Length: 288
Ligand SMILES: Nc1ncnc2c1ncn2[C@@H]1O[C@H](COP(=O)(O)OP(=O)(O)O)[C@@H](O)[C@H]1O
Ligand SMILES: Cc1ncc(COP(=O)(O)O)c(N)n1
Image (cartoon, rainbow, N blue to C red; front, top):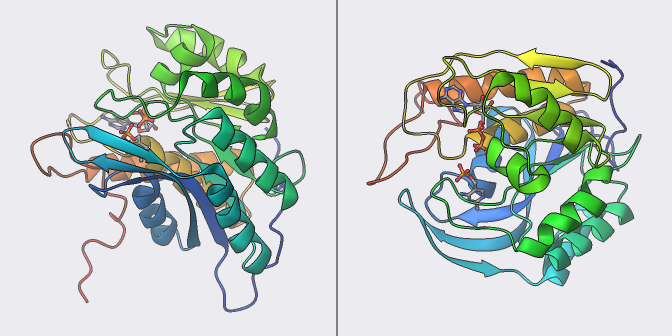
C-alpha cells in the first residue's frame, strides 16, 4: 500500500482554519444517515463540513416515504459555490440519485480538481437503497457509476448489496470479499473498500481494502445491535475527513474503520425502527 498523501485541496488551510470536506449526498429528515451523518462525522473528526444536497428524503427510523431530487444544475452550483470560495480538501458522495445527477457532479468535480489521480481525494459511497430497502438510485445510474464515476474515485466503498447490484457477485462469506473487490477495482478506482456489515453469520465485521495489488483485511468486532442506520455513511465520511487532514488512503481507511466501529458500539434506539450509529461518540459524554 502506498503511503504518499493524495493530491490536496484547491486551497491550503490557513493557520486557524481546519481542513474542509464536502459531502455530495441526500438529506435524511430523521437525522440518522446521509449528509446529516456525514456532517456529524466531519465535525467529530475535526474538519469543516460542507454540503451539496442531491435529494431530500422523507425518512425516519422505519423507512423512506418520498425522495425529491434536486435539479442536477443546482447540485453542481453548490459544488461550484463552495469549491471556488472555500476550497475542498476531500470530498465524498452518497445518494447520487440519477445518471444526470452523476454527470453534473462529475463535471463540477472536474472543474475544481476533485477526483482523479494526484488530485483532491474523492470517496464514492455508491448508496443504492436505504437500510429499510427503499431504492435511492435510478437503475440507469448504476451504469454511470460503473463507467464514468468509479474511475475518478480515490476510494469506492460498497456494501454487499451494492456489490451484488454493481457486479452480480453474491458474497456469502469472507473468502468472496476478494472477488468482489477485484470486480469493483476493474471499474477504475484507485482503492476499493468492501464493507462486510451484511454478512450476519460472521462473528466479526472484517472489511477488505484492495489497492489493485494487495488486499488488506480490516478486522473489527461485530456488535449485537439492530441500530446500524448510517453506518456506511459514518465510515466513508470519517475516512474522507482523514483524507482531508492529509492521511494516505490506507491510514485514512483504518481511521474510518476505527471510527465506525466505535459509532456502532455507541448506537442508540430511536423511533419504532432502526436507530442510528452514534457519529458523535467522541464528544457525547462531555457537557456544555
Ligand atoms: N453490527 C456491527 N458491529 C460492528 N461493526 C459493524 C456492524 N455492522 C456494520 N458494521 C461496520 O460498519 C461499516 C458499514 O457496514 P455496512 O453495514 O456493510 O455498510 P452500509 O451501512 O453501507 O450498509 C463497516 O465497516 C462494517 O464492518
Ligand atoms: C439520504 C440517505 N443517504 C444514505 C442512506 C443510506 O444509509 P443506510 O444504509 O444506513 O440506510 C439513507 N438511508 N439515506
